[in-house]
Amino acid sequence: MRKAVNPMAKGSLPGEERHDLLRDLSGLASDADLDGASPLSTFLPLARHRRALDAENLLIRGGRGVGKTALFRFINEASKHEGLVSRLFPGLDLESVTWVEGFGQSTQHPDKTVLDQFADESQDDGLRMFWMAHLVCRLFKEGVYTVAPPEPLWTRWREGRSDPAAWTNAARGSLAKLSQWLDGMDEHLRHSDRRVFVSYDYLDQLGLLSSRIRNRFTASLLALWMSLVGRYRNLRPKIFIREDLFQAGQEAFPDASKLHSRSMSLDWTVEALYRMVLRHMAARSEAMRQWIGATSRRIPLTQDDPLGWLPPEHLPESGLPSQKSFIDHLVQEKMGKGVKKGYTYRWIPNRLQDAHVSIAPRSLLTLLARAAENALQNPMARYHRLITPNELVDALAHTSKARVTELKEEHPVVARLENLRGLAVMLDPKVVIKKLSQPVTSGANHKIDGFDDDGRRVLTQLVQLGVLGKRSDGRIDVPDIYRYGFDIRRKGGVARPV
Image 1: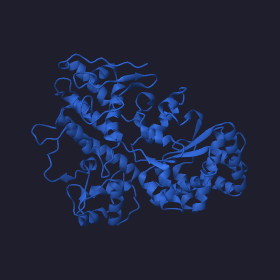
Image 2: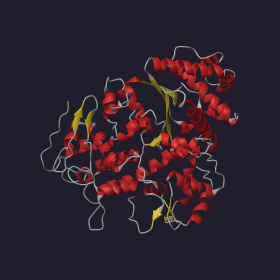
Image 3: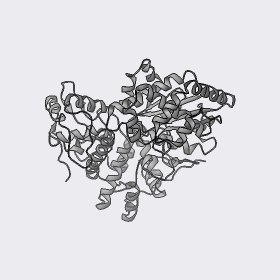
Image 4: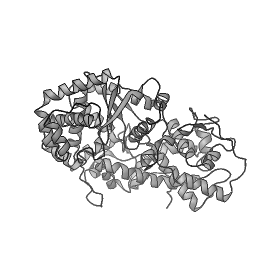
């Protein structure tokens, strides 16, 4: 049953109420960061999620923080409620799907350091055999098919998961039997009218210090599944993959170009991002839901069992309700005074987007949570507004540093932007290449990035990642979401808060 929230009375918020609301707002975090919390009350189901779950889409593309892991967690939780998945994603018949983790962070899989050593000593066909053997054993382990895999593979896999070379060699000697096992499993699934989705996540953690190993692991996995999906209709992968690994994989084997039509991106629109924020805010408290529904700028919420409170299905850029009315209510209409000041609802996404115009949901939540922390120290907003433009600007520096730290964990080469610290955009490409050719060798989090002194290749990689942008005249730009984190200036820009 759904019911609307009644708006609060007009007027300024008492100090105690504002403090409680700011505490709620400061607790915003992405679904992946909400340890132990159920994603049912915060995850926002979108049309793109339905496309991602379609059986014919094998790859789900996106960088760190776009919600790949959150989607998987949500599906696992939603599947516990009869009929919920079918209601949210009609036409996909996901109720007949069994999910199996083909690779992830859990102890069900070999340690990543062990796998890196294994890959360094193996040919490409050995990596492909590794993925096939691991797939078969994981399917049997999870009860998808009750016929045991051929020996000695099963025994070696069960007893020696820390030694992938041993059970990969066992699989190599049982290739025909492995194919027969998969044939029998597929027939079993067809007769029982069941399907299996095998999920692969955290592939970017393989070969963390070697892009060559990481790309080989990914390419061999993609090659395996391209050979399997035409033969086994009831067995499908869901491979959560970074955009750069996807691009590298397309160049690695024949027919890899077909992967593009079997993939989809989890990039977010600005409308979806603001709806996601409303969803998270509404889950915080009754007081926050009342605030969302307050004044003439109110945003109507609806209640759903078991999903909790949901924002409107559509949130246009302007009007009532809209993206603009929401941010006007939260901050104020413009980032300061005067006709040249920009609208706040546009300022926020413009500062958070990378060079590919992509925004990570985690960055938006971090920005608002940090602004609320700033406001708790000196709550100066008026009426029902919770934060001020200055608190938002101050939060941007923190958000940029958090995003930089996050990205450096996946891409150690990003740390080379330290060499641009103190410069002002737009940057001369020759200067950038020279400075990027210098590896960053200091700091507790230093990691070998594998680019040596090849500054041109570093620049190409950072442009591909969206960390740097290249203008039509060749000059190099640094998006604000990364610029602040490395203290890179913008000529004529507004002085930053200290």
